[in-house]
Length: 220
Image (tube, rainbow, N blue to C red; front, side):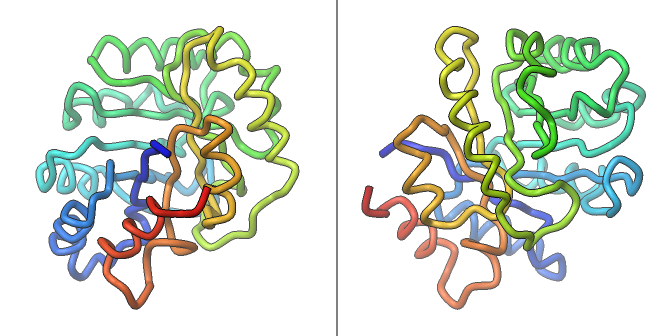
């Protein structure tokens, strides 16, 4: 079973960030998921521009930047200037008056455009953007904090989106409360990748490499 695993770096040990990045790389992580929060769009502050810059310099693996900020178009160039072609940038459609303009800026910079869909956001409200983006990050929890419980009704949203991927040419990614049973259920259905946080990856006794190996060897 071929699927991508992304490390949610807001859950990392910031006292040893260089070691964390190296250990995750050596352990076989596919990319680094960077949660940027402004305390306005979501009720929390998480990673900063400088955190993102550091990780971009510390690894050759792709970055997966999730902008949980109001009006990202006002600040998008701040982030794009430190990213590399092939990195992904997700925005929340509700956070912008004209999200397609922001997505076009991401495309023009050579990045992969994506949208993040909150649990309370219907697929119908983002339908036209599905024709622009290459990735859709589906939130299975309300955005803003790690360690939340999975919201079961989001499963139907995955099913609806999976039926559209071939026609509209985008991939689907899971973010939030990602447990082994969710990977076992949704990877075979076509979910392309999973953001790993405290549920499966961080704060465990075994090494990142062993954890990632165990996930890739799940019994499908």
